[in-house]
Image (cartoon, rainbow, N blue to C red; front, side, top):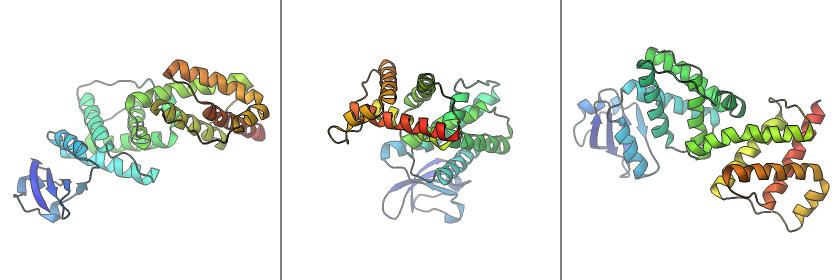
Length: 280
């Protein structure tokens, strides 16, 4: 690989054998690098980002960041990839690294904030929140600070953004929305949720994906003609509830939920109710 630019003492950009620009991290690699030569023994991590714009933002971010902050962020992202075991948006290298660096700076300045969505994140994004707890423990250990548990929720939201390829604003809106939808269904059918049950988890996942599709204007349109009428006739109470949910979505997002999506929502409400009855 050939050196393109020395970003700082610990980070450089280079061209790989295929001519693709990459960012390389290693303690002192920038200090010792000479144009055209890289000491491979000093390479700790090679970052491949999907597009040039993201790569440029990442390089700009890394200019003044301490190596320890970059290393701990990279370890958290690697752990996230292992736990989730699916492709996530590589912009997380920018957003999460920046957030972690900012969180550490805030702590060092004595600025500690509560996360108002702590409960919602714990409830709706359990796997991501557990990763956030791991991240906080790792940061506290490696940096020698004591970030509060609220920070685990903030990190979890960044992971959710990368997982669903959404913005922080959309993720926070959805996180606030879902508990209200769950309340609508709960009051409609006078039920209690077992938040650790499979039926509850399936329903919450459906609401997450539905909200994402509504926001992106990518609603499903895959059902055969007449199927919606069949669903409406088979499950009138669940369909009535889906209309209430659709009205709430409209008020919150300003978008209609299409008939096909309401039918699928009706089916998922029905599955939820059956799951609760089965386990009661």
